[in-house]
Length: 241
Image 1 (cartoon, rainbow, N blue to C red):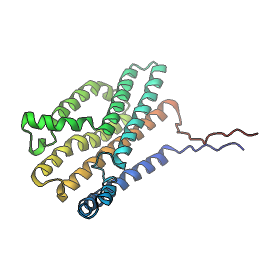
Image 2 (spheres, rainbow, N blue to C red; image 1 turned 30 degrees about the vertical axis):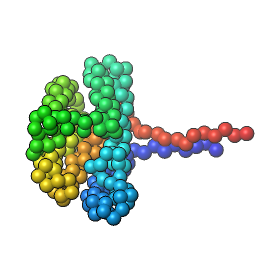
Image 3 (spheres, one colour; image 1 turned 90 degrees about the horizontal axis):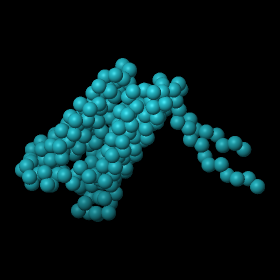
Image 4 (cartoon, rainbow, N blue to C red; image 1 turned 180 degrees about the vertical axis):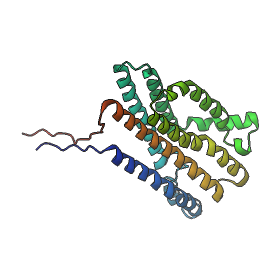
């Protein structure tokens, strides 16, 4: 008997991905409050709650965010290949974006940028909105990337360009913009205050939403270039006697 393929449409993928982001975002605040309330009672149960908060390293949402970034990287590599085969002058930019998102996925999993906070805090005496001091080089990094890809983005077709800009606003607005807000609350009120918890949950949710919208934009761009585009999944074939 031939195994049936599972081939969801882009609309189905979009609904599933947005639902997962919404679920993580809605669960995060009560899970983080539960983590702090349960800590004096049971560290083990508190740690389980922490695993479902979007602001925690080594959590399920952090793992999912890393997968999202890696998926975006893989899809960008596919677009780069298509662009190269079609002799599109922008194929190198697609390939560079694929590499960038692969590095972002690695950073999300290993939290390299977090290691910059303490030395930069010490060096600059950072506090307030700069409490999470990695945002200082982060601003310059985002500016450099924006300038490097500005011409590329402006030359995209209108729908793809608008989708990229919207997804980028959510991602950068969350990863960098709301990090300033979270830093101010952390410095003034501490990590267990509801204002910081809400800011952190919103920040991480915006990041996941931005990457999700970016993936959908890439899929729709691919569809416009190669026709109807679907991801297909099929169970492994087993040998029959």
